[in-house]
Length: 218
Image (cartoon, rainbow, N blue to C red; front, side, top):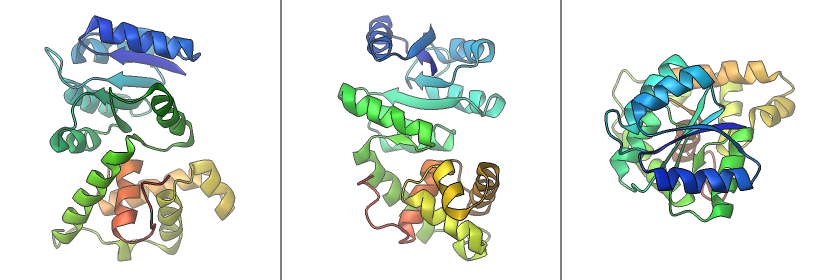
């Protein structure tokens, strides 16, 4: 996995880089603000970007939106000190594939990053409850024109339930005897119909609908 580190504090970048390298993760480059991150993402096309939020010139949320719009195949995980709900939800709306806090222990950090290989969202466990609460609120206040779960096909319901319990695309494909591309196609339809942006939001939605009982015990 090739990683681009984005943080405006050199000491923080150096510390994270040393931790990654010690765990056999390749750090291809570092950036000190969002604009530099966008430029290096275009040139290097890393597998993963670890993105801070508060930075000069262009913050991490705006950089995430711009990179995801141009290079959606790049995985972006926000790595921040901010526990603010607004930052968390804005990061997910911007297309971030995860939201981690800098006070995580090293083993927790790598466990959550490891889940990315299975297409799981990298989100600190205690933040999951916040996401579920927010989606429950949005569900209760859903506009009349918004699609409902009832508009999903039988196959999409099956995939939604499997995503909710943490199954990867490969595991879903095997369980339903279809190809991974078919799973991706159905996931795209689910997100479009339910106005969701990423897998974390799909799983949170499924939880608010009672499709999984213990979402935080993944």
